[in-house]
Length: 408
Image 1 (cartoon, one colour):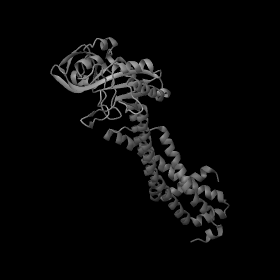
Image 2: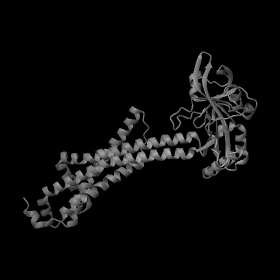
Image 3: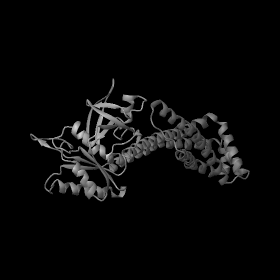
Image 4: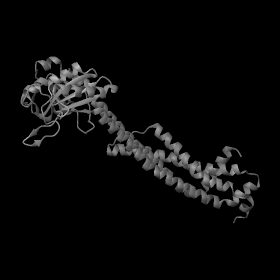
């Protein structure tokens, strides 16, 4: 008996009990659809996180001040004013693994353009910050070192701020007021989107660091920065750069082994990598949970195939009597099981792709359907048929022809 004839006989047997065949496939259909949809949701979430990680920049180390004690009460991390522009220059000069270092100060306030106003985050920055963040302008120019040295009242706008103050118009060259102080808009930054913490990175205004220190941020000392953002020369040098920064600041701030450091460093690459790994783990977990439906569907196929063997015992005996071998019977029932699961797999793939598309459009949830996941689901559906169909097929092939012919 050739293979094509075996397939035709299997299809005829499945058509004989159409409703039972469909109900048998239903578990596989639901399982494959769930796997495709869940993997699409999980992959979409991983993609969003990877995009957010890319928007932060690569090889970044954040240096923030430590805490202070006042009246017996300790502030949280960042409460002290212990980092300065001199520290930033020292990092650039004395830390070989550091590519860029940029001091920043942060505040918030009302920004006004004519009769339009918007409350936003205001950052004092140096030109290096935009190299570290890999954040170019789409219009105008970026902040220069001359702007910083001269404490010039110029600013860069994030896309959200530009849209709320100027609509579709180009804001470059216009004068706005930041905390009632006039600033000239020199550029608009490229859109960055949300940060991994869910903050809108485009809802921000950047001014030269020294301008912010003199006009926008009150400080007990001159040259104070609220944080330092550092970019290592390569991913392999992040840990070395962090060690160099810690050693340098310990020396500059006279931190002894018995004295608590007045600063802390955070390796953002590690933090964001953990977030990405969590998203991937969640994607695999969703896929694993959905795969349980496939196992349930496979058990259903085994059950129905065992019933089919019992119902067709006399037919099996007749085939053996006219010359069919055990391998022919085994192949016949295995083919029926695999056809059931693969047809169910095709329907499940279509439903899974459709379900993921509906979820994406209705809930505005990011989904990504890959050809790889579809191929894996289809192959897995066939494997379920082979695995759960083998025992019933083996049982059918092992029947005694004489006993099978006597079966009523």
